[in-house]
Amino acid sequence: MNGPWGISGPAFAWLYGACVVLPAALAVVYELWLRRDTGARKVPGLYHLAALAGGTERVTDTAVAGLLERHRLRPDGRGLLHPIRPVPADPFERALVTLVHGNGIGLGELRARMARHPVVLLLRAELAQNGLSVAENRRRTGWQCALAAYVAVLALGIARLANAVPLERPTTVLVVLIVCAVGALGLTVWRQWPDRSGRATTAGKLALHHGDWDRDLARTTTGRVALDGLQVFPDQAVAITLIKTVATKGRLFGGTASTDGGGVSYAPVYSCGGGGVSCGGGGCGG
Image (tube, rainbow, N blue to C red; front, side):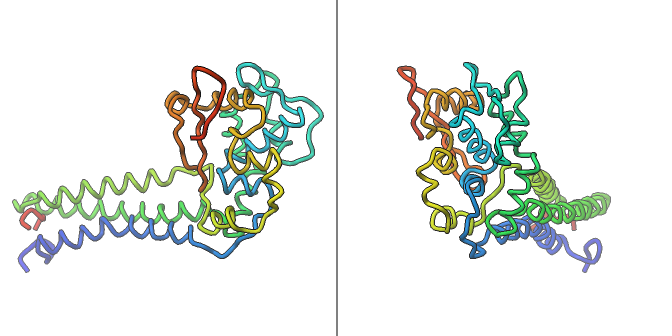
């Protein structure tokens, strides 16, 4: 072999290319494995059902719907929520009320705060323990391992490039692969971003649609909101006002659908005529 480090340029390019692809591929496979069907089909309760259908945002919406229905929350004309005593006994509703201050709070801010509340974190831990949702710490661990691997891969590529340039070896392919490694490194950093909503496993999705849970919930206001979102709240004027506080301009007029936590939530379509809502080979450094 007459190449640097005793390996020819083309051979190194093939090996390095495999190193660029492999960590991310393994992290993806690991995440898919975490989302596998564990065989679990029992959904413990209403808020577990909401989390599987729409993530922690739906948990908040379900608690809000229950409080509004019993007149324990009062929405003003701006869509801000105000508490009305007494404090409810339900732990999720009680947690929500403690986050609603005297000046009122919008639904978007309330969702963000509830996602970090211990009662919701415990709910997510229960779902993960039962195999119904992905454990966030385990998902991030896979991408953390990929991140460490890409730091080593990038260092290897830079070292090879630094060796090849003084020897006037062609480096075009190596440079392209290093750029790809940088991109893969960026991907792993992005995947470290914590998911505060939650991801249902395949078992969680099957449990939601075909599993063991009280079907009578689907006939209650909170149960309907847990399954389908605030847009099915009986008081449509209140629902529109609350949703409007968290809708972006595009969602406000476009009625787009977005996935969160394994479920699908539909942003409302607002019409100007009424208050209705519808769901809608050489350069290898060698």
